Amino acid sequence: MQAWDTGCKGCTTYRPNDVTGSVLSVSSEKSDKAPADSPDQVSEGGEIVYMSDPLDRPAELEGNTYKVKWPDSEHALYITINDIVLNGHRRPFEVFINSKNMEHFAWTVALTRMVSAVFRRGGDVSFVVEELKAVFDPRGGAWMQGKYIPSILAAIGGVIERHMIATGFIAGEGMGLKTDPQAKVVGLDAPRGKSCPSCGQFDMRMVEGCMTCGSCGHSKCG
Image (tube, rainbow, N blue to C red):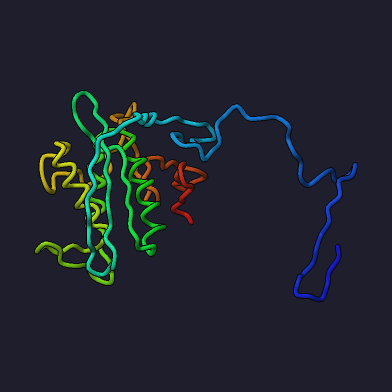
């Protein structure tokens, strides 16, 4: 161990030997499982559980572009929503947002990627509209076409909603799902115990005299 009087507390060098062995080791074996951060999968108890595959993107898609001029922004937002036709019905497939205002660049890219990923999962994705419309800007919203919009994200949600109505995906304004629909799970109707106050999972069990959650580890005994 060596130390210098430069503000650094110290530098330790570890060398493998016959007594202590090595601190770090490199395995040459390759795992057959996909990376933990791979899409379309979740980790459950060390095992990879694959979710439903996202919809494949066709070579061509039909879509519309909408212009949104937020009063506090010098430049307008241009929102493009592309649809895929399944069983004779159009449904939203991906979203793109473009603007000359670089202040919005990072979060609009993140938003479009996340929303597009949700759309490509299929099912009733109208909850995205209600989630965006429920976002309030602490600095205050703005009046647009005689209606108060609480944030620019809510304005984007309104555009997506109008597009869904025009394509027949939802019946009308305010008709979208209020929450993200949950996938059906086998055995969901089976009797369940108390839900965990921390994560909400029905996995509370008695461990060494304390009610402990098997999912997140929350314990009523602290």
